[in-house]
Image (cartoon, rainbow, N blue to C red; front, top):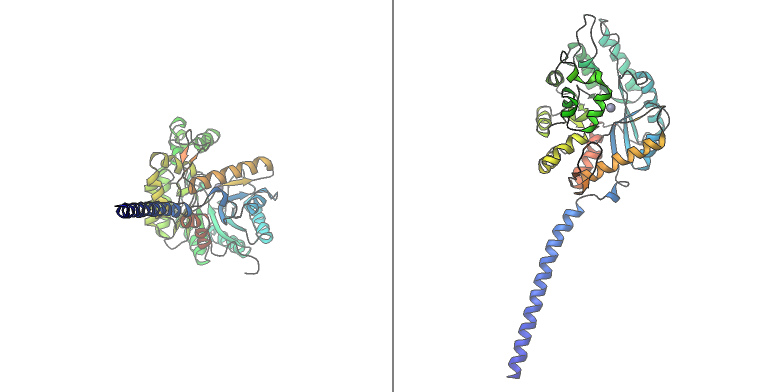
Amino acid sequence: MKQIKVYLNLILITLSITTIQCNQKKSTTSENTNTSEVSDTYTMADFKTVRKVDTHVHIKAETNTVVNLARANNFGLLNIAVDVPDFPPVEQQVAIGKKLLEKNPEMMAFSTAFTLTDWDNPNWSNLVIKQLKEDFENGANSVKVWKNIGMEAKDKDGNLIFLDDPKFDPIFKFIKDEGKVLLSHAGEPKNCWLPLDSMTVNNDRNYFRDHPKYHMYLHPDMPSYEDQIKARDNMLAKNSSLPFVGVHMASLEWSVDEEAKFLDRFPNASMDLAERMSHTQYQSQKNRKKVRDFFIKYQDRILYATDFQESTETVPEELKKYMMEVWLNDWKYFNTNEMVTVPQLDTPVQGLALPKQVVDKIYRLNAERVFSTAWKPADE
Ligand SMILES: [Zn+2]
């Protein structure tokens, strides 16, 4: 009897050990699943060490605030010259871009631009090509066209000039033949055609309050949002092999569905996130999964960018504070599933917790592929 009791106890002990082992195994398995999800994403602590590229900044003065902070945080930069009335002349911006590239070849690249001043000269396209040739020889890797095309610049008869005008075609062909990239800021965010109180994000509301000239809701005689997008798309249809970046999410910032359609239609096009993070976050507040799926599906076509600006009027401490806030909020949004508070939205937005591989593409690898000669040490 005693033997039987001992035997039964042994069976019980064995059974309970087996159960504990099973439970342990179960919990190890589920822990492994969690661990692999967690280890598949970067943390906030990784921000500084992961190599990144910000493909959209405007450095208009040799004061080095943006460059030094970018270097300290492991960022390469694309410094973009642009034909904006309150910016220094294009050639001055290009000269700064060239100097910064020479000093920091491992972390700087620059983009040039051209003006429409001489548009009515029959030789205009050739004059622009001559200038671009020189800029490319000096190290420019891309050319930016701005919203003045379609919204402001007019020919001698007073007609607005659009991006699909045939006079641009030899220039775009030259850019393609030289292996360079066209960056295009077409029109404005869709909010620009809405009254201030109907706009989706605070940054647009503030910008168009300060720049009524560009607030198209106030100018119903001007071309529509759709006219601007159509002219850009017509140009791309004519120049389909041109390497192209639609800056500001190709001005389709209000809809990931429209962005997806655009990227499907134009396989040589990418888009940058500059100043359009809030529009993306506004959509993910409504449907996080949809926005997350968009970034995963189009992980090869999106470039991280901010639109930081530095000029002689910049207060370095203020700019540094602002840059760190933007960079860290963006990193938190893409890499974690935590709530992120951004000034452009009235309520917080949950992060997307994108896999590391996707983040690496958006933050660096896509930029290195699109701008294939950029961010190389001098001796490479
Ligand atoms: Zn910009």
